[in-house]
Length: 274
Image 1 (cartoon, helix red, strand yellow):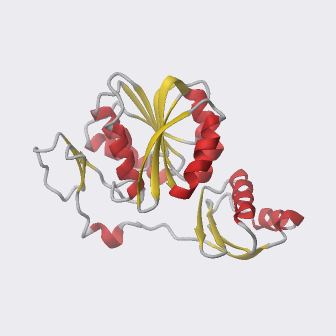
Image 2 (spheres, rainbow, N blue to C red):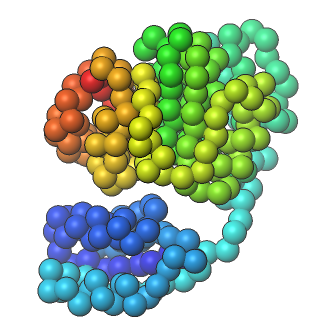
C-alpha cells in the first residue's frame, strides 16, 4: 500500500511522522517536494484506523491524509532491463545481467538477476558500497549484508574472502531473489534470511553492510553496534549528503567512529569503525 500525507510544517514533523509510521510497520518512505510524504507497507499490515488515530494527535495537526492505494505486484525493472548495461567497479569488478556474456578479464564478474529487488550497482548507493568493500580487509571475516536486496554486496564480500556471509532482507521478493543470485554466482554458503534487525540478537559480525534508508539506519543503529565486533567495520548508505551529520551523530552514541565517505549525485556511502 502507498500512503500519501501532506505535511504543512518543517522537516522535524516529517521525521517524527516517519518514526511513528515505522512503529506501525511501514518499510520505506519517499519525500516529494515541497510537502508530500509517501509511505509504503504491506497490504496485510495496512489499517486506515491507525492513520486516523495518529493524525488525531495535536502534534500532527499540520499533517493531513491525502490517499492510500494499493500498488500491484510488478517487475519494476521491466522497463529498462532491455537496455541494462553492465557496471564496472574499481576496474576489478563487473556486475552483469544474465544476457551479458562473461568477461574473464575482470577479477570478479558477478551475475545479478535483479527482478524486483534493489541492488544492481546502477544506483549510486550500491556502487559506492561496492567500492568501500574493496577498501577494508574482508579475508576471514564474518560479514552481514543488512537489507541485502539482490545480495550483490554479500556476493562480492564472499568473493573478497569473507569466511562467512549472512544476507538479510524483510521483503519476500528480495529474499527469493538473493537466494537465486547466490547460486548464480556459485556462492551457496551465503546464508539468506527473511526478516529485520530482530534477527541480529545474540549474533556477532566483523563487518556489517546496510544500504537501506536514513530512517531505518537511525532506528537500527544500536542493533548494528551491538552485533559488531570491536574494531569492526560498519558501512552505511541509502541517504543524502545533508543526512550525513545526523548519521554521524547517531553513530557516536554507540561508539562508532566515522572514518570516511563517498558521495555522488548527493547520495552517500559512509564507513565507520567500532
